[in-house]
Image (cartoon, rainbow, N blue to C red):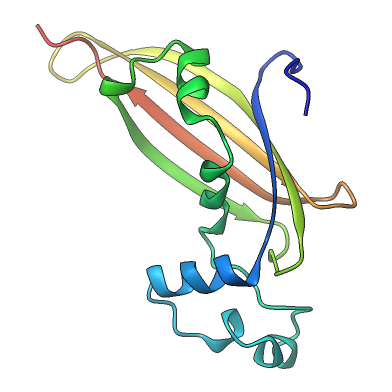
Amino acid sequence: MSDLLPAGVVDRVEYDVERGKIREFTRATFTTDPVHTDPAAARDAGFPDAPATLTHTVVAGHQRDQRAFVDSLGLALARVVVGSVTWTYLRPLTAGDHVVGTRRVVADEQREGKRGGTMRVVTLETEYVDADGEAVVRLEEVLIERGEQR
């Protein structure tokens, strides 16, 4: 992957959707549907292999340099909170998929805080495409950098 990214692109990440990671997320999220852990149950349900749990793309965080990402946006990590995360699936991710996620800044705003002062609100969108270049998942994240304490 090149260090040179197009304008507006914060970072790119790629990874394989693996059965072992799907199993880990299934346990971590208390998901009990056997389609996530039993390939035969997945096929019986119409999936080509075990489908990932709905928040599986957080695996990408282990493949990214999160500190460099925050620094590239000029955010003060100690004052950043996640405002929201929304996933939109265009098809299920399944074991064996290889995905590439491209994260872009779609909005960067200063807003007045409820207790005075300002806060910075950065909205990011990551589009994950499969090996055929087809969009699979879109992830929207809203990061809020609280103003300095007075």
